[in-house]
Image 1 (cartoon, rainbow, N blue to C red):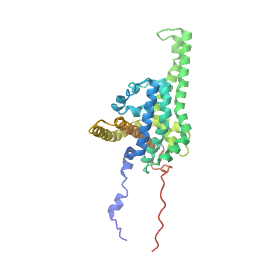
Image 2 (cartoon, rainbow, N blue to C red; image 1 turned 180 degrees about the vertical axis):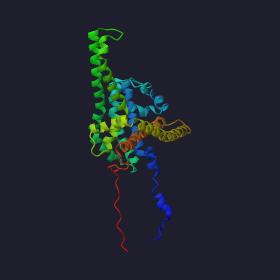
Image 3 (tube, rainbow, N blue to C red; image 1 turned 90 degrees about the vertical axis):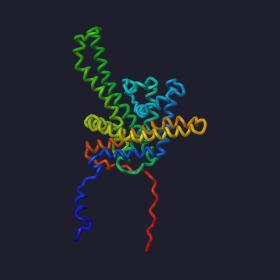
Image 4 (cartoon, one colour; image 1 turned 60 degrees about the vertical axis):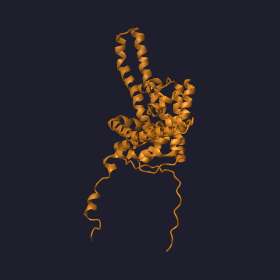
Length: 342
């Protein structure tokens, strides 16, 4: 029997696809969310509600945050990553935050952004796995079921860091009580150093690594069929600490891919603002929406890319295929038409 495809077919059958050679190419699929009207409208609404809360809690003027959001586009997506540990340790990247990070601001940010970020993590993972854009309602039903677990994931690193910080603080107080107050190290401080130093380092690891581990853990909670909060958190810290170099490279790739989309939206926003001022006075609500749209898209891409990064790290750590995702997009599909009998 003659092979109708010729020898070329047998040769190409053994050639891997591009996503097998370069797994990070799957992250390009995540950019589809930047064209989803429902997700853009939802994230835009949440952003404005969050800003209203900031103005009320921080006593800001009505327009005092406009330039802060418009000029550094990345400030909005980074500010959605506030966690309980940020109330304890002042993170340098929040130096330009318009108000001080009180526990009220942290709680308001977590309350408002946590459901949205969980949904975006799930959407990003589904798109990275090569599936269709998931249903909006189905996604948020999954979020509602897992909200209590997400709260555990957010609080455990801060509580663990607080425990080790308490040990370090208690030993420091004991050293000062026994050795007396002094600007220089006393024999008591040197004696307690073997306990204070490891406790401080462990507390720092919980807080710093948690910035990456917690989003990965939230993704595990949203996409794994049998993941509980503690198991998801252990996955997040394992992928962060044991795959640190790969995580850093994937973040760089995700930022590079997202930058093209965000710049396109910035250009679209600039053109829209120009058109709005070409025919008389601009619409009072249109200009702020157009100004914040690139930052909103950046928020969506940031969290969705993390969902894809989790699947790539899981493939590297556990050998599980990226497309192996036990999640259905949740779209309604019309039944097939009956076959026509000839």
